[in-house]
Image (tube, rainbow, N blue to C red; front, side, top):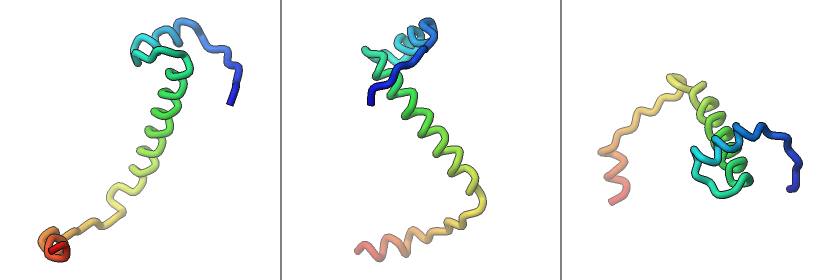
Length: 65
């Protein structure tokens, strides 16, 4: 999808340098992927301590044999 953006040049230049991406498009894609990953992780943290994950690994391994 083609989009026109007005981005601060110093910010974009720093992002290019830090990420070592070759194109501005690659930097934007990387930034969006990181933002999505971060928000998904934060969403999962809401369940911390609310999900019971008691797993009997010995029993689990016996099922695989």
